[in-house]
Length: 385
Picture 1 (cartoon, rainbow, N blue to C red):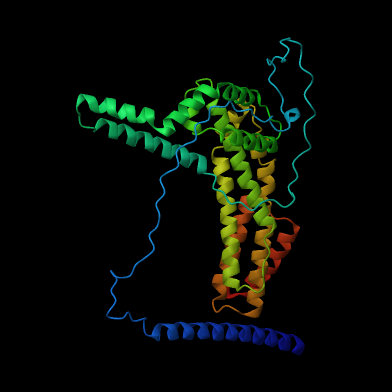
Picture 2 (cartoon, rainbow, N blue to C red):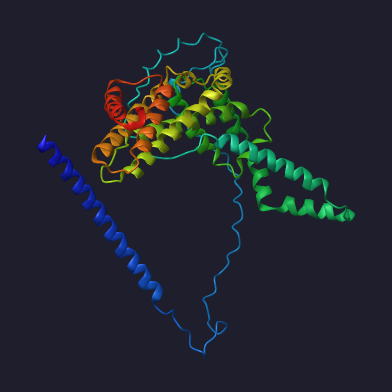
């Protein structure tokens, strides 16, 4: 018993020493800032004035005109064409209506613990925000056109002449005239694309965006081609963007480590923020899953990854790692008596544990062990008195 009390006092002493060193460093930093503020400002001689100081003039370059492309684009082949299943009514290039070979076997199920991926943070609402901005832009343009005052008869002709001579408009017209075969090829690839795995959709969308970036203005050029499958291309981009966000979030959760050097308050806030980010992302998918999965099925886009039995369900299990680290950190802080308000700390730990339990649908073995340690401290606390 005496050894346990000595160990507890020693841990409490180390915690107080660490806090004392932190406060001393912060005090030294504040003193340096005060010393800098007390220094007199730089005085400018009376003989000089601000107008007499000659600053280097910045050379303003004229805007570079849009490059007019007059050579047809030779597109690169689509990535991994063997992984894409062509539609049943597709014809061979030799013009024969021979039956297509049987589709390849389905790929193996997606593994929840993937390798390291790029840490690019993106927002799932990007596509929706993009559409909202386009709608607002269209309304603004319509209102502006309605409020234009009537001008002289030659003003419209002058404006039209200026627009026709604009380098940007000329570049768009040139792209429409010269890139017809190129766009027709891309349109057929989009229409015939029937990916079996969401990773194939990512590769296809990346290839499609690289090819369309060759155009001077994708939106302005493609609107001249009425057969362009805009809805399917947007749906493929939406699916690839959402899945990429989920993979980046999975990488962030898998790479999370509870750094004991960070103060308990800051560490707990980081865990809560990451758990909230995960719940928000999953909630946005579940909210539109029924309608979105139907749209993906119609366009032959994989949709099984959105189910609880797919990648979304596996991503939910990442909450187990966060809640276990959170409860373990709370238990350690309570044992070391680092907080004056232990009841608030216990309540926050129980609330997050319940929140994750309801979100995932239960605890795994390691999380149940961490919860049992927290429960023992709750029983000893005056909260249940």
